[in-house]
Image (cartoon, rainbow, N blue to C red; front, side, top):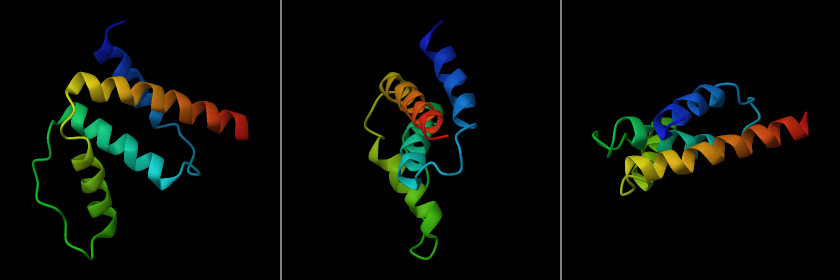
Length: 90
């Protein structure tokens, strides 16, 4: 299985993470996913009163220097780790 296929498989698995997954971890996954699928940030930073979108934008911006392959390589084990933690706590 190639990196792209494995990434897509884990992107689907990430949708099954429990609601109890921390916002910090959700933001990490969001930033890595956006960088892998869209590339560097291509929008302006949301306003200060739009906290949720601003946090997501910041998470994406934090990884924009990484290559598509690097963020996919970071994303896959992060999803695995969170799924294992969720299974252990249930």
